[in-house]
Amino acid sequence: MIRHACGLVGISGHKEAARHAYFGLYAQQHRGQESAGIAAWDGGALREHRGTGLAPEVFNELSLQRLPGEYAIGHVRYGTSSTSSSLREAQPFTVRYQGMDIALAHNGRLVNADALRRALEEDGAIFQTSSDCEIFMHLIVRAMRHTSLEQAVLEACARVRGSYCLVLLIGDKLIGLRDPLGMHPLVIGSLAGSRVLASETCALDLLEAEYVRGVAPGEMVVIQNGHMSSLRLAPVQTPKQCAFELVYFGRPDSLIFDEQVYLCRKRMGEQLASESSPDVDFVMPFPDSGVYAAVGFAQCAGLPYEHAMIRNHYVGRTFIQPTQGMRDFSARVKINPVRAMLEGKRICIVDDSIVRGTTMLTRVKKLRGLGAREVHIRISCPPVRFPCAYGIDFASRGELIASSKSVEEIRRILDADSLHYLSLEGLARSVAHPDHYCRACMTGEYPVPPEGASQGCGAR
Image 1 (cartoon, one colour):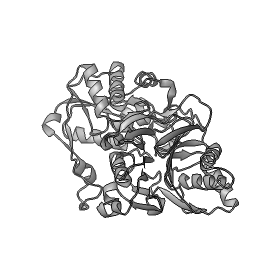
Image 2 (cartoon, rainbow, N blue to C red; image 1 turned 90 degrees about the vertical axis):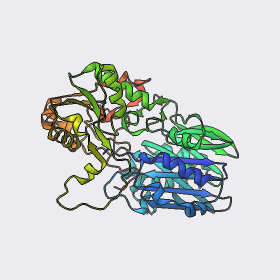
Image 3 (tube, helix red, strand yellow; image 1 turned 60 degrees about the vertical axis):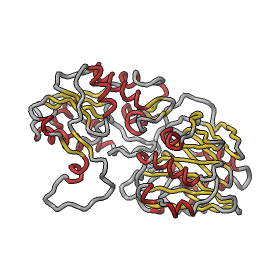
């Protein structure tokens, strides 16, 4: 499974800020399932509650009641390392500096994090975590020695390179910002006179907040006393927004980069069908990835669309472990076939990506074992050949099957009757502003050249 780094939320001027932050996190749970946290300001003190697991596992009625106040920020997190799920890494990150309580949450990955950390440690800084969030906090606090908070944030951003969205809370001041290339999303909403910041508009929808606009690439918004002001981090330039937000990460009901995710994925499926449509009995996705591209593919190709694999939506993060003989239990407990639909049929699977290839190989074997006569694969994005430097947990290049194998070699490895990826041109035709997107994982053309291994919100 491909993992994103984080989801963010901020609430300013609402009497139940922490509760609203919780529901904002709940709506964005797909952006991070390893930890969740909220920090809230009640006019006199900053209180926080963080934990590992899903938001409903971390928070309950009592923990939310212990977070009073009209101002709050929240964070859900995926670590970008398999060993990075400790409570210490959970955000928001909080410090007290010269009588001020500061809370900060971060989404993204800095390509110069290792160099910054070394420089700060040589200057006496002590780190408690391995996250880029703490680097930001050190940079901001040091700059606050000689300037205002807003200018300190601007100075900190001038020293970092890579992708970042931040939400900060200092007293009744809420700040949100995106890096100059706008790689990951952050939006502004309005709710009964209060302001909401969130990574995705699906959080605004759950809160019944009105979508105002996205935070622009390279913009910092400062919200205080019901007013919002805007500052520039850097001169305006062509954005390089993460294409995988639309391909995979964003919820289909979200508006991301001012594009409706559902419609973009349908268009990807339509473009895919126009490039290569096999002669099959029906088109099917493996839930839930690929569903909306499969809808567009089937409609464009004039083929029946079927759900021949059914997902169990009541499976939690943990369950009683099976016996040794119950192989592949974790996969079977989540998705189960409709056997009568598969036997003797020619099937086209539509999915959003192939990373290592192991999951798709298992799926093809499963379908053939259930009697499928032909299995054709269509992927609604171009091959992923390069690791992401900006906050998505793609494997190292050596583990990416498309980095060293041709499409025909991958087809043979997967034992598929045919395989076709969406072309780069097809992806471009699926979005409104194709030159505004980063496709480094597909092309190797990094808008901010990586300087070393950095693990963003997660541990190194």
